[in-house]
Amino acid sequence: MTVRVRIAPSPTGNLHIGTARTAVFNWLFARHHGGTFVLRIEDTDLERSKPEFTNNIMEGLKWLGLNWDEGPFFQSQRLELYGQKIQELLDKGLAYRAYDTPEELDAMREAQKSTSEAPGYDNRHRNLTAEQQAAYEAEGRTAVIRFKIESDREISWNDLVHGTMTWKGQDLGGDMVIARAASATSIGQPLYNFVVVVDDIDMAISHVIRGEDHIANTPKQILLYEALGVPVPEFGHTPLILNEQGAKLSKRDGVTSIADFQKMGYVAPGLVNYMTLLGWSPPDSTQEIFILEDAAQHFTFDRVNKAGAKFDWDKLTWLNSQYLHPMPVGELTDLLIPYWQADYEFDWTGDRPWLEQVTALIGASLTRLDDAVAMTRYLFVADAPINEEGAKKLQQEGCADVIKGIAAAIPNYSPLTETNAPDLIKQVAKDLGRKEGQLKPILRVAFTGETKGPDLIQSWLLLNHRGWDGDRLQAALKIAK
Ligand code: GLU
Image 1 (cartoon, rainbow, N blue to C red):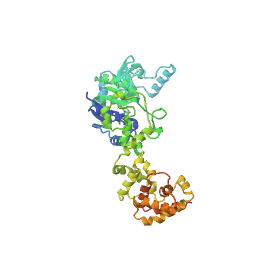
Image 2 (tube, helix red, strand yellow):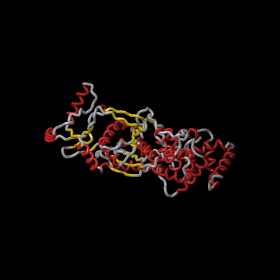
Image 3 (cartoon, rainbow, N blue to C red):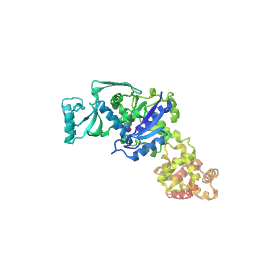
Image 4 (cartoon, protein in one colour):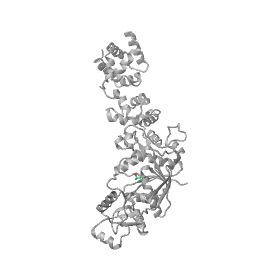
């Protein structure tokens, strides 16, 4: 089987999670069959299409690792072909010019409503005479081109996800508009359902894999394939992505574009792994962590769910952490720098080894890259505050003595190291007649401003490297008892 699939986004917004997940399934299917994955930019809506969205879509696909084999093809550059194909349908008598005004169409709809008829065009301009057409033209009316849909037709296809789907011609809303702003001499501006078919034919697409929201377009498109005299491809409609409440995931749910997820600190392999599981499950359902290439080996449509896929933030975040934790320190540091840079002043080129130590300290606790910002505030902000819980801790009797004792001992332990820092704590504990375990929580608050956090000695050493540990002790002393 020669497999050729495509992703066909409209550049009217940033790359959406739904489009990206459809791209994932297309990519997996293409790779599984050694086929070809085509990128087509559906920019026929000139008002809403923007080059920055095209860039965002292409960057997003690349970032996710969904590399395409052909394209990008731009529909806006293919208008000549669409014109030829519309002319072909006109010549065959399968399409015609209709001259109804918006007011006439509204009146028709109102009449249908009052008699509880299904809404749709009643095909009233199907058989206009040349004289009638000329009269409408003379009135200055613009035309649309309509493709004939016979109401007694039955259209069936075997959907890769949903099985047999059957539609009746009478439910398709009457003869369908395939171009607007036409005239007696021009075919005007071709519309989505038509250009998609022309392109899928021209690009020899074997399997049309797209979101379930396109199901209602498929019977119309199948009729167009027939009219253009070519075989109909396979169709597979992938389940929608739903929010926690079971409604379609939308802008109201906060983040929906891939760029948003990226900003939030999800890494591409984690996000793409999660998207693969949104509606598909591998044959070994215990296997949750895989890269695209592995998933491609096992990807078949009989394991794609019909039901909508609920978006599970916890699972996404957990998967993300599975990619962050084993990441080499250098690579993780590169990914964290932009997050730190956005919030903190620091000489970003000057102290790479220190930055890598910071990464090593927190790497295992990260679930998202942006977690790093709050976790390391005490290392980037000279006067990082002590939080409420920390302040409460310092108000317990005896904290001031501990802090004074540590501050006094530091000069004798210079340079401070991984080995002598614990000795210093031990010695001060002994001098104060207290247990080491009692000193550490106090020091943690003094150094980091918090009662919980990563390894205390490492945190101290990193702070000491910046020359800030003494100041922190003095600041803590101001509120300690
Ligand atoms: N351009 C359409 C969209 O962005 C996709 C068309 C298709 O896949 O057939 O929803």
